[in-house]
Length: 145
Image 1 (cartoon, rainbow, N blue to C red):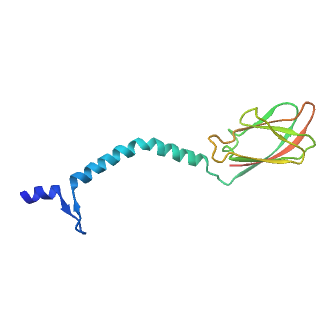
Image 2: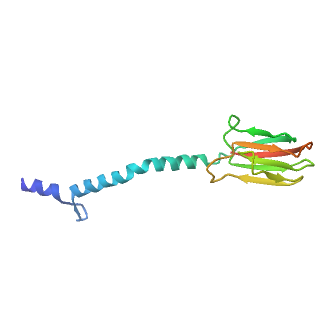
Image 3: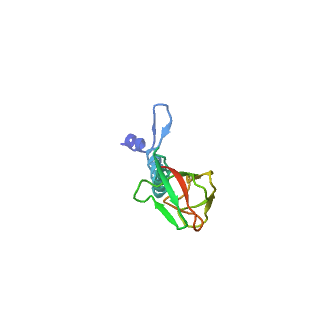
């Protein structure tokens, strides 16, 4: 009986190291107490990296900008864009707003502009665009998702 009690307290593994089952169970319990609270962090990290993944697809559009504010909403078209490439093919400058109709990017005739949201908290969901009053221009958009 004494041998069985002794084996519950300490044993030797195949390399001759002393293994204590009670300490092993205690350490395992402590590890669970540390890991379980981290699960929401791991889940949110997985969600973040999934949202930043590039699927390799391209959405191309031709935007005919006028003096009136217009927008292209990607909510129901395709997954949100991770980057957008603009080419102003017209004769007037165009103003581009990403996700909000403020902080405008000015793109002059013949210019290009790339907007990247890689690593950003929010992808490109809506693109606002307009010209100066009584002006028009054509902009090519190449969006990547």
